[in-house]
Image (cartoon, rainbow, N blue to C red; front, side):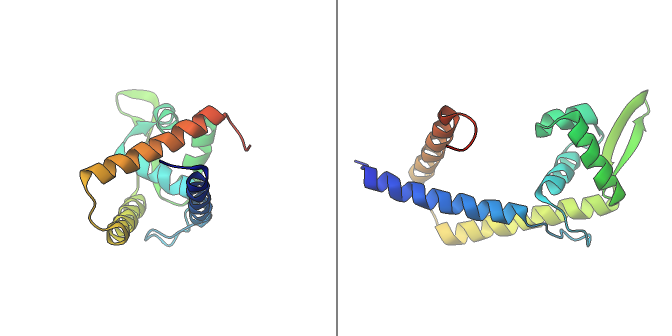
Length: 155
């Protein structure tokens, strides 16, 4: 049975991990193009790479951010020659977005970055059973539900 001191240890470890992840996410990285890309930029590149010729509306829905914010992000990425806008041949009013060759390099570089992370995770965790995976997923779902029940903002 889990007691209050166990939950405190878990909570402290979780907060430590969150702090490290936040610091990791704030650091821009070069994914092979020579550009230092922030997390929001590379995630936008990834969304466009997985959904070529996507329009601004669908990209904003996919990423869960406003059309205004995604428009600004796409303009920043276009200035870095990572994405390009073009007209839909079927609808001249529709602007579509796709990766440039440099954007594809960043996309593939990010994929390699994640492959290294997954390899390190496997090395650090080792082989685990399906029951252990189920327990971890149950634990993470419980954390997510607890956060959702806590409401927005810091406590």
